[in-house]
Image 1: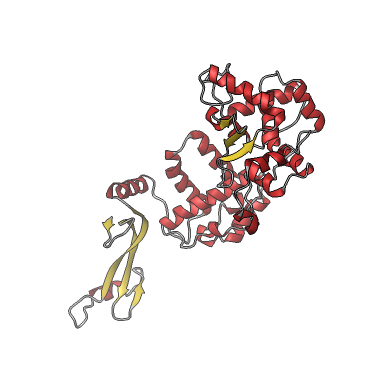
Image 2 (image 1 turned 90 degrees about the vertical axis):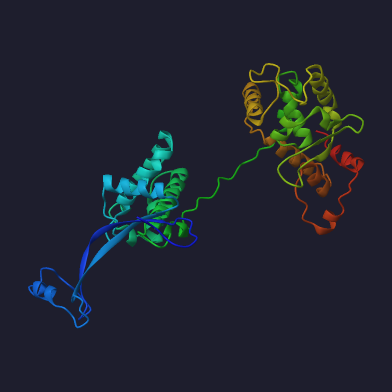
Length: 370
């Protein structure tokens, strides 16, 4: 073990002796010690007074480490369980064994099981010398595995970590895992389904059922569920009849949404209820076991109860999709609709004209008559 000079991130090098070479200084060649001439040559002395044969120690580097203590630990681990690190011999399976022994020390048992599961599908690579594996082998192994996309991505992550470990230990110099482009799995397309006219009528007919009013407010404002859950009493301007809220993007933050006439009573009811509870948030769950304020997860649970009660099949974000769909069907101004829901406006001329008045926005949102 030695510390290398210079400003290095991992200056401590750990090496092990893996053998010796006998070098003939006269012929500049390697001599086999079983050679019949070995004993004779070992006695020869060159004119400079030095022996003709030199015994050279051969090393293999176990790795480079940031501190002396980490280097000592690596050396101790190797001495407890020596293995051949010669890049021509060590297989994929052996690299996994050594990598996992280190990696599993710092993660939970459940996380260990996910890596073991991913490794189980790598059997075509098990006995291939690690230095001979190429991107093609990695991609084919993943593509031919009869498993779901999540496990395939876990296999790719496993390759990433194993190559990082192998490069650190001088087994390979190229990270072929990073070149795997053919195994990226597309994100599943999220299907949005707007509430039908009949479903919206059912919600209005049962507005007293817990959290139906919050769903209706989402349908008539276009706010995301999380944005609704975080609305504060102070975000409601009863003089202007507007709501200020929004998250996620620059275009969506702190946007102004006129309160549609159909939901004014619902807003007022929650406004008065919040004040009576001395709550800062507009929507509250009086039966909440962990406080009355809502989070997205809490809202999602209440949303599912409403869907089950009235035999509907929707996701929480379908309220926002419904607003956008009905807005287009009602011929709302394209750019005002984008302002209300917080979508980015790409038209340069329209983007410059940002001072749409609340009254203009109110006129457009009132086009929704359903």
